[in-house]
Image (tube, rainbow, N blue to C red; front, top):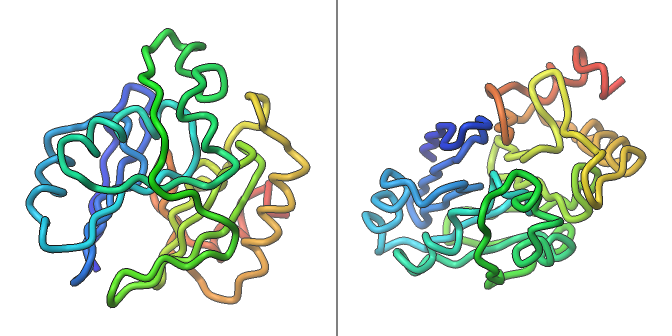
Length: 203
């Protein structure tokens, strides 16, 4: 599995390009950046998906354009689907950005597994930052969106945020027995066991 990531917004949201022998995945595209378009169009022989960890603008605004340019399917947690067409929930209205309403091709539920040939992606519903936040578990990696950061967590004071729910989601991640590499929506990668030991929100 190959993983590349880079921030493509002023707020530093990470976009991930993930390639396996059977799939090409883009996770949380703020923009239809040329690198992202080229990645998807350069892998038309593979199963291609745009996976959204949650519905905030800095993780979704490039998704619909990417779908139009590449034909890749969009997936999001079912409880965040409304944010794809509601600038109040996505916060795009709050920051003054235009949001073209769109819908996802796939609505994901807790513990659902996306089978992509050689790769299974398990979906963990991890509400707190938003009501429909999900983490994607892929081999030895978790793409955590804004649920869990390196030594921090996502805010819960935006629409549909809930700190009590976030704590439960963190406890769920804490219960996992494997030391996954954590690729989050902002900042540098970390590991699950390191966060359990050092992240104050996981105490």
